[in-house]
Amino acid sequence: MKLNFEIDLLPDAIEFLENLDDKVREKIYYNLKKAQTTNEKELFKKLNDNIWEFRTLYNGIAYRLFSFWDRKNGEETLVIATHGILKKTQKTPAKEIKKAESIRIGYLKHKLKK
Image (cartoon, rainbow, N blue to C red; front, side):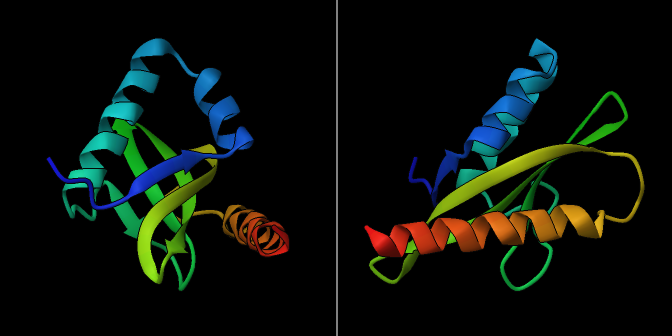
């Protein structure tokens, strides 16, 4: 099955996942893989011009991994997951979106220096 994009987890995203219960982590990884092959807004949703979120609901708790696209050869083929949260309200916290934006800017600056 062809993947629509690859996913790279930055250290904060990895740490978030490692600190979760095994069953929750498995469900999130399952949803990440599913998002790579489908186009479901329930799994992968655009929050603003640059930031997206991987969405997982498990036992009534909403888990979010913030992310952004990194283009290779002008194509959107790589999604970078920045960090994750347990979402406790309907609205996505603005500070978490800003954190993802800040990580994105730092990532792209570092990438340009290579």
